[in-house]
Structures are given as C-alpha cells and as structure tokens.
Amino acid sequence: MLREKGALTMARQLPVRFDLCASAAFPPASKGRLALQIRQDLWRMLQDLRGFSPVVTVEEEGQGLRVRAGGRAAAPFPRSDCERKIAALLTSPSHRARWLAQAGSEPRT
Image 1 (cartoon, rainbow, N blue to C red):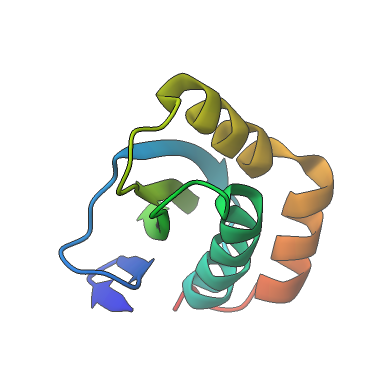
Image 2: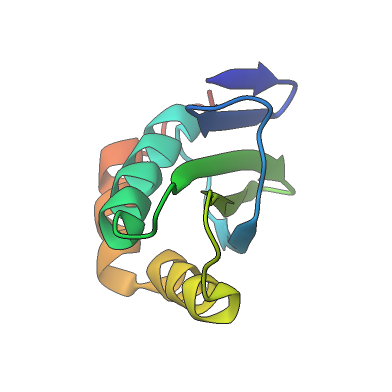
C-alpha cells in the first residue's frame, strides 16, 4: 500500500503499472477500505487473465474520490474488452453500494 498526500495505491508489484485501466468518481469514504474492496472484485473478475496483477489508486478529487482500477498483465490480452469490464465493474450499482457500505463515510484515510 503506497500512501501519498491525498492518494492511496494498492498493488502487489512495484513499480505500479497500469497496462489496462478505467476510472470512476466516488463519494467520500475510507480510501483504504474502498481500494481493498475494489481490488478484490477486480481480481475475481480478471483472475483468468494470465499474469494479471491488480492495482487500485484512490485519490481525493474535489469533495469526493477518483478511483483508477486496472493493473499489469504479463501476457497479451484483449485491452478494450478488459477495460470495458473494469469500467462496468466500477459503475455497477450493486458493487458500488457494497463497496461504499464497507468503506463507510469515515474520514478519507
């Protein structure tokens, strides 16, 4: 977990690399809890992608948060298809409700 002023990045491999990604806006919540929940679902969704290592960055943006989710892939992959899946995950009403319930409306840490 990398913490910078106003941002948190959750990744297993350094340096952080986004071979594929999508982003979405979120209301204020715990950055760490939100990143963890998103990373888990991202991994579940793309675990069959050979060599995939998920990365989630949560940054403060205005009165809310901006989430960038994706990661690195060790093998060739269908970029547009994967990015479309990530974007759909980030905008899924049921996933967002669950993530935000877990992340709460606590101070953004």
